[in-house]
Length: 413
Image (cartoon, rainbow, N blue to C red; front, side, top):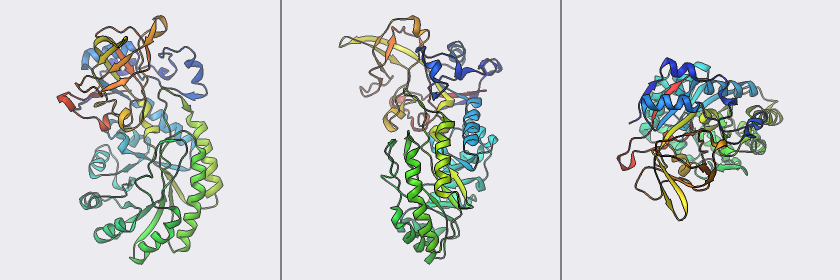
């Protein structure tokens, strides 16, 4: 069971203001790279991790509210004309949702449970959009009855479902998008061909419904913002076609896809969003419309760090093997489902001889392997590891396989 607890005042106060500049990583050149790139950084030091592990045990995920708020403010500063609707599916923990609500964000939900979590955190239904293109009728009705009024469709079948049960909603028509740099194609399953958008808008209008928004998603972990520019060009053609068909469009939803640093660095928020802002101006700058985005991973990934402990060690095939108390069925689930490759940070690595090793999770499944190619120092049983960039698609898709508890979550300033 996940338990949410607040850290002690001592824990909260000990989180350093400049923690993102602290050279916790074993690579000395990484500190220089932070000036021009986003790199993975733990939100706690090893001294703080020991205090937390002693109080709460391991594995524990630590949410830094200040890191999350800093990321939100950086995105807003770089995209001042874009409204942020945080994609709750990335991590619907109430501490994350509450922090973003207090910062002024809105929220994107895909289910009634996500909507409930958002309301518990302080969001109102009018601050929400529902972006699942294929909803159960119960999902649709539950969210509608709570007051949500913006729902997504991408085909006639979904349109008929919405028309039969909630015909007075504001419709979001989702376009399929292509991206050359995204790790996960989110249009393989959903989104209409942009050339078909005017016809689908006309289908809604013929039923007396209101199409108010076009949306797309270039794919998760989009490393190159020029992919947005290419899609925005297609979206503008679809927009003009829908307007010609009679749709009263007023909102463009550019989705998410903003990247986060894992073992590889990514562009800074300012650099990435500046390129996106220029593309928005080029393709939609002449229209007096609302523009919204659905950042998920790029918003929350860096605010959470895993504290995990070495349970055992052995040598297999000439390689050191280390077993830790979290794995791919738990917080490392993003390795399976989200193509994430997490950096394992050890204490004082720069002063210890490192070698290639295998790091495996705690279950009896041989598939439960976290890393096969990272070079780490010789680890002792009981030693702590820190794993940064754990805020997105980690605990959100974790399970209790093998009867093992998934990581508890605590929050710090």
